[in-house]
Every structure is written in C-alpha cells, then in structure tokens.
Length: 298
Image (cartoon, rainbow, N blue to C red; front, top):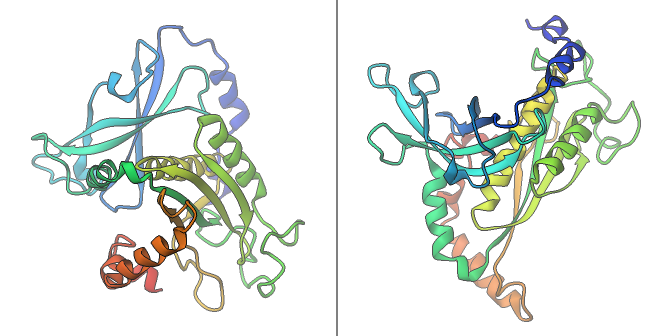
C-alpha cells in the first residue's frame, strides 16, 4: 500500500524551479489521452522559441505499447499539437500542449476522438454551439480510500457536505483552490467550483466554450487537477461510483445550446433537439463512457 512517505519535499523542488531559465529555452509538456480513453499521459521537450500557436511546435512521438495504443513490434504513435496553454507549474514562457494521436503511417489513431469531434464542430460552427460542463470528482488517499474518511469506517450520512464549510464537512479544499487558480493562470475557461454531496467529492465547471474548445478546456482542466493533486500527495478519481452503497455518484453533466436556442423563441428549438436526441438515447449512453455505458450504469 502506498503511503505518505512517497510525497517528496516540495520546498526542495522550489529551489531548482527558482533557477534562472535561459531566455531562448522553453519547456513544452505534451499531453494526450491514452488507450483507456480516460487517462492522460504527458512528457516534456525543450524548444528554442516561445510558441504562439500549436502549429509552430514539432510533431513528436511516444511508445504506444506502454499506453495501450500500439503493439510492441511497431509501437510509435505520433502526437500532433492542437492547443496551447500557459504552464502554472513551471511558469514563465513554458507551455502545456494538448495533442491528438496519429498512427505511424499518418492516419488518425483509433483512440483519437478529438479529430472526428472537431470535424463535426466545423460543420456546425455557424450554429455557434456552446457547452458548459459540470465535472464531478472524488479526492482519494494514495490507498484509493476517499480523502478524509475514517480508515475503518464511514463519515456521517450525506446532507451537510454539499457546498459545505468547515473542517468536519469538507475535505481537500486546498487542492480545489490550487486547481482553480492554476486553471485561471493557464487561461482554461473555468467557471466555478463547489463541494458535492459525498464527503471528499467536489465539482468544477468549465464554460461556456464554443465548439472544440469544449473538449480542449475540459481535458486540460482534468490534467491540471491530476497534476495539482499530485503535489499534495492526493489521487483524483473521475469514477462515477467510487464508493458502493448509499453514497452519491459522480458525473460530467453537460449544458448545451445553439445560437437559435439562445434567441427569443428558443424553447421550440430546444424541444425539437430533445426529441431528436430521444430517438438515439441508447446509442448515446453507449458512447458516454469508455466502457459502452457500463460505468454510467453503476
């Protein structure tokens, strides 16, 4: 079992991060979604300029056989930069780089869902689709037990924890506040946060975002949350039901509208859209999580 001894000395780290960085050297952390469809990977490289656009950065590669994205005999997977964000951990001109994955032959990788999403967003850009995502999550100790819970028991029944205030009602606020500020620094479109129904469960909101920005900003916010929590020796889980029994689940609730829906008379357009969605409800649920809807069913 992992324990607190695995947490390194952050004060010692700051001594090195405070060292002057050459003006012509920029650290870029490339970030991508791995073969699980829900976990993130990252690695860094040095470039000799400050990128203003992801297109200025080189295409890179990684060993897909170690991320569930390739076989061992031909394991190269290419990562193409698609979005740039300021790096709150290294500061300065350093950047976080969200990437799409491509196979070694240049074709879109089977795990690359952003590419087809962006194609759709481009087709409907004249409708100005807006998204607001409410991302719930659970903070855990490194033994994957909810943070702040008794190790051999349970906290009191749900009720006082939602939007709670006080050390006996909320656990891990330091992580939440650090994540919020990191998102603002990185220019992620974070809209807010609050404690949720289950103790150690929280939520942040991203949006409104138009088109593909929805996915880019949500995934970067998820990355920042994992990375911030790492500094505190805490694990983040987006599992929809981390604790069995009478404990609240977690989801990513989506608020959506088009330009027509936001105009007078938009309710009629909303109802028409809902009726269309209802005809394909089962297929949408199958696409809701990486396991064909099985996670959501829990």
